[in-house]
Length: 98
Ligand SMILES: [Zn+2]
Image (cartoon, rainbow, N blue to C red; front, top):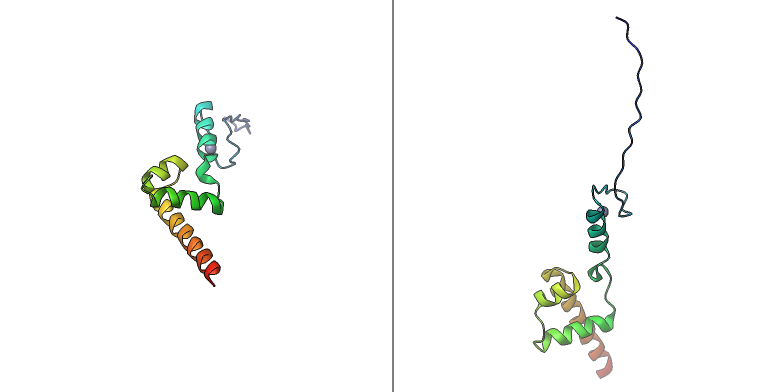
């Protein structure tokens, strides 16, 4: 028996979420991935938004966990952002006093 060169083209299909590293098997999974990656938590807060969150937190209106759930961020990330907002506010207060 002699050998014969063979060639087969394979079609590969997937649902795209526009992340080139992802190949989702279902439309639902791709849509969920898109929703997850476009949640508000991915966007940067403005200084006024950070002050608003700090005000809410310091007045006892929300815990770091609640703000995290609301904005799609982890509790530890919220703590970091609140510290940053506090520093900005303190810096602004010192600036006005001087
Ligand atoms: Zn994806």
